[in-house]
Image (cartoon, rainbow, N blue to C red; front, side):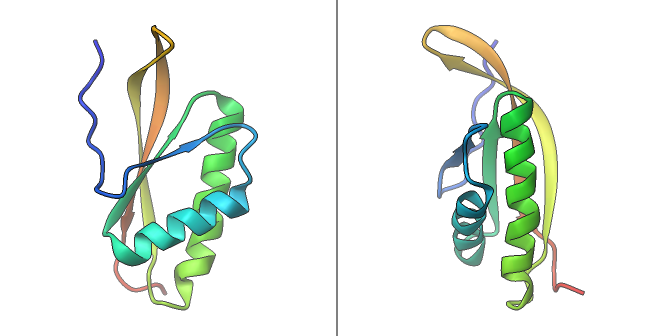
Length: 99
């Protein structure tokens, strides 16, 4: 069964194994400056690797602005071309002032 999406207003940042983590980090930082949360979605080990690197990079981009991030990973099912695939949903939220 496909779960209903809990999508932030800015939408889902979909990350692939070929995504540039610096580019994803820039997009994530932009969302986090405007919104209290964001969502990244990745399917496969390579994509998850790029997404996690992007979150780490985005933390450094946001540090001077006093924004720190936390990430809550969870599984979700998504439909791609009529096939159901298991994806990792990375829910990213602000965590108070950076130390």
